[in-house]
Length: 390
Image 1 (tube, one colour):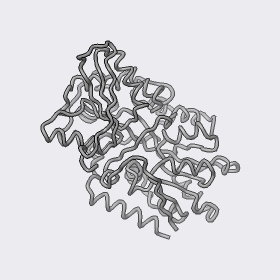
Image 2 (cartoon, one colour):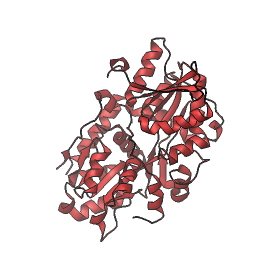
Image 3 (cartoon, one colour):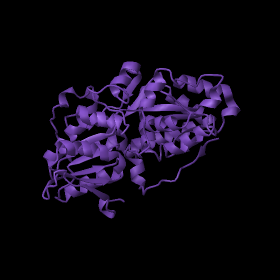
Image 4 (cartoon, one colour):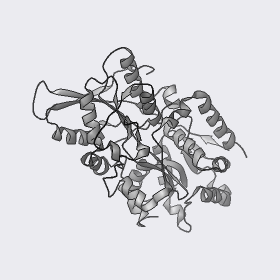
């Protein structure tokens, strides 16, 4: 039997937001992907935006200039994590003030579309984990090209027409309860995952967790990529269904249960969340699946109707610079994508260690496929059918 458990959502959500937009929120303690590198070297096995105003956090120009130009940022990154990046930018641009608006990924999309359509000015820079909605903004003419010094050197998969840029590199992982695996290794591939569930039968029933793809945008993203990468993915879904998998809308709900032993395994969990939890709890282990590891990204762009497009491009350039990406990896603890940055929490190091195992989600029009509600409903229907197939 299958149990569906939906964790409470801390902030307001809307039905369509969960249906479209591969977004996730990020809290101050949420990532330490340097932990991945330790694992790898063997040290551990509103329907409209106007419906509610976003909080605006002002960062005055460091120069003290009263009439300083203002960079307006719409972002799904919590303020506490945004501050180091803003501080780095302002250190290099002391005459620029920053107005930072922290909002949900769907609200970012809504605000830009509705402000632009109304003939108004909008944000100068948008940073969001909703990869599909960011690409849709660009494809529908709501974003402008940003030809920057790093554009030509940026990974091809992470740059769509010099308009939409992937700025982070975040793997999907298996998580496991370490004390339960003292006598055997945890599954390290999807085939091993199936074998483990079938071998242990009743002893694992009800002790597996994954995202509810109807309610978790990132869970839906990972499942859609699974379908492309693994020809027999439905055998994994059937095996989880037979094992009484429990479904959640948040990573924390799954990780909490893995940590205390209620769950043995979690499937396709956002690695940055898992790494943070594992760094604080020795009972949580992480596996980057060796058959393939899907990698998601947070996306930056400059809106077409930006009030100060030059400032937006300057901020994007800072995000892409060696300094900005280093702040991302070391201070925000979110893995950097730039090929010029190495060390812990970087795509460079992960690729050196894992090579072709890593499968980044390309920034392309392909991300928009499941914004088609018919196609989305078809995948969800197949998912539910296979989960219940005994």
